[in-house]
Amino acid sequence: MLGSTPGWPTVLADGPVVLRPYRRSDAKAWSEVRCANQAWLAPWEAAPPGPWQELNSTRAYLYVYRDMRRAARGGESMPFAVCLRGNDGRDELVGHLNLGNIVRRAFSSAYAGYWVDARVAGRGVIPTALALAVDHAFGPGGLHRIEVNIRPENVPSRRVVEKLGFREEAYHQRYMHIDGNWRDHLGYALTNDEVAAEGGLLARWRRVSA
Ligand SMILES: CC(C)(COP(=O)(O)OP(=O)(O)OC[C@H]1O[C@@H](n2cnc3c(N)ncnc32)[C@H](O)[C@@H]1OP(=O)(O)O)[C@@H](O)C(=O)NCCC(=O)NCCS
Image (cartoon, rainbow, N blue to C red; front, side, top):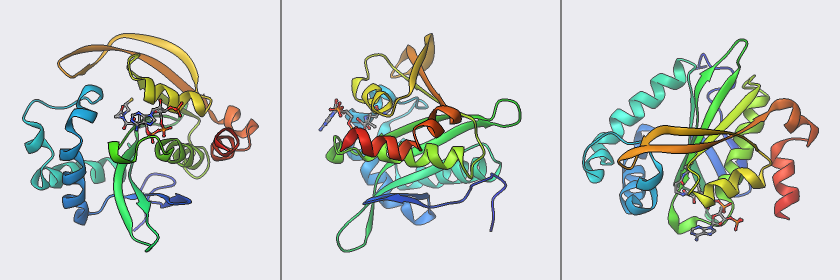
């Protein structure tokens, strides 16, 4: 069934990196990767109060899945499971990338958020995923601008957007409640004209990572 969001649902891929909509059957894989990565993810994520293992249980996934599906169907977001395709052709769920808070008409903008399993960090999985998602957002998705907001201390995440050529354009004080406090964030953004001038973001990423 077609969703009400232009460009959604869709599957995007480059090499072994595959972005696809979540499935109900992702519960076990999602819960396992989230529970194994508590110390890696907690400093950077806005989370409701409660024990991590409960918030990331297979049971909790059903609520997360329902919310993601509802937001995607309502045109508010494009939530992708980030998978790595093995030599056997099977996809393993290793991360998440969401284009959220989609506002259309004169704004036509979204915020990108992401994480990857620490066990596959440093292999360019998220830069590839973000480049695929941004190219899709600016093409079939019909958006004009993508923003990413990052805590200044999060050097790996800042490297992701810097390698992709996002502009640092704002400093938001006490921007979001994360890991027990209101945290400042740096604002980065790209508009579709900048990306078109590069021949697409995936093309740019291939050039800089070659
Ligand atoms: C930020 C994050 C998504 C980057 O994903 P990735 O697929 O590893 O991205 P890259 O492979 O491009 O690596 C980015 C940077 O991480 C650092 N890095 C590399 N290998 C690493 C490893 N094994 N462990 C930790 N950091 C590593 C490097 O600084 C690298 O930058 P470089 O290319 O200039 O060397 C990932 O680190 C992550 O999930 N962190 C926790 C959650 C998070 O911060 N989410 C974003 C919130 S804004």
